[in-house]
Every structure is written in structure tokens, then in C-alpha cells.
Image (cartoon, rainbow, N blue to C red):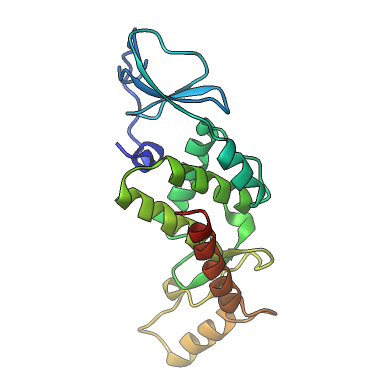
Length: 206
């Protein structure tokens, strides 16, 4: 199971607690993050600080490289447990189409600081092995350009959900004009950042 499935999954853990391995699913295969001193289940993503009980298989990862990468995004590298929460919360935003397609929203509407989400996505990309899931994480990373500082409470761009296409044409034009008001060309700014984010992924070998 890919890390994106683990992070975005919404199925509640079973009430049964297993005596060995993962207490949530019984899996005996774990990855140990030496940098953060954490074990996480390779099946459901459950994170614990103490070595699980039983005859378990452990793959070790040292995330110092991710820590160095995070410095370039103005954020400390998050732990695996924090990554779960950060990516899940950001994934929910994307699922709800926030901001609306073709619109730019204020970065304050993100569930975590933009730099923190960037750092979490980079670590998740380095841990993910499934190519399809990697592509989804890359899309999420590049889509961070759709949030910008200073846009304000009203998203910039054409929000078709607020336009009555069957109503008065002049009213529709006015709505579109109002939505495009602003002291900056946010679409151009977002496009430039999306290109930079693409380059970030290339530079990171992703």
C-alpha cells in the first residue's frame, strides 16, 4: 500500500488491538525513521515511538536528507506522524477543490503554512514507491502555487459556481469583472511559482 493511500485513507482503525506487530492492523512489517526515532506500519501507516512487540521486520530510513531539503522551504522537517496529518489535511483541500479551479486563494486558507506542506510533500515523495501515487503527490506540490500571500478573503479568478449562466448576461459579466479585481496579476504570479515548483521537483531528483 502506498504512503498516499495511508495518509489520505479515511477508514477508522478497527477496535481490535493486536498483541504483536501493529496494534491497529497486526502487520509485522515496519519502517524505522532513525532521524525522528519513530516506527511506522508499512500497511496502515500507524506511527509509534517504541519498537513494536513480536517478530517484526524493520526497514531503516534516515531522513537527514529530508531535513536538509526542508531548510530550502523555510521549514523544519516534519516527523512521519506530522506528515500524515499535514498531507491528509492538504489532500482534503484538494478533494474539495479549494480553491475553485482557475482561482487563486489566500495562503492563509491552507490548513498548514505553505512551507510546511511543501516540506511534508517532499518527504512523502521520497518515501513513496508507487508511481501513480508519486504523480498525485507531485500534482499536490505544484498546485500549492494556487495559494498566494495577500490575495485576501475572496479568491482571485473566475469562480463559475458564483455565476448564473442562465441569468442576465450583464450581471454575469459584472460578476466576472469583480472577481478579477486586484492590485496584482495573481494568475501570472501563480503560473511563475508553479514553474518554480516543477523545477524544485526536478532538482530534488523527483
